[in-house]
Image 1 (cartoon, rainbow, N blue to C red):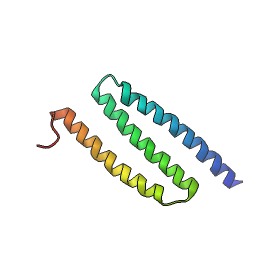
Image 2: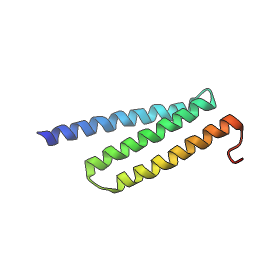
Image 3: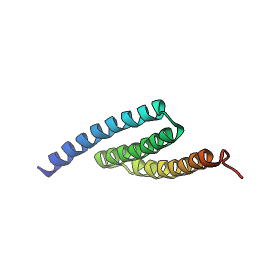
Image 4: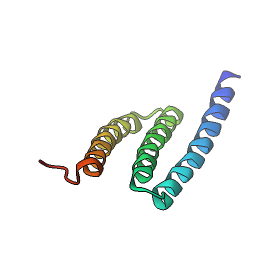
Amino acid sequence: MSAQILVVALTFAQIALGLALGCAAYRCLRGPRAQDRVVGLDTLYVNAMLLLVTSGIRTGGSFFFEATLVIGMLGFVATVALAKFLMRGEVIE
């Protein structure tokens, strides 16, 4: 019984995260300002990380968790670099 609940919960979570990825991609493409696009990109990588975590839980493989860590680090650095670029117009001083 608890295995069925886990499968249903993971399926629902993956569907919801897929919809959230679509909404974030729309914000990245159609954002009225550059700041909205950066927030959309930030949301996009967080949702991708969560989708990988749910896939890792479903399959039991450790590859998904390692990929999540890499995406998290690269996404954070990209968000900081884009924010700095929008604030000052340059990334490297």
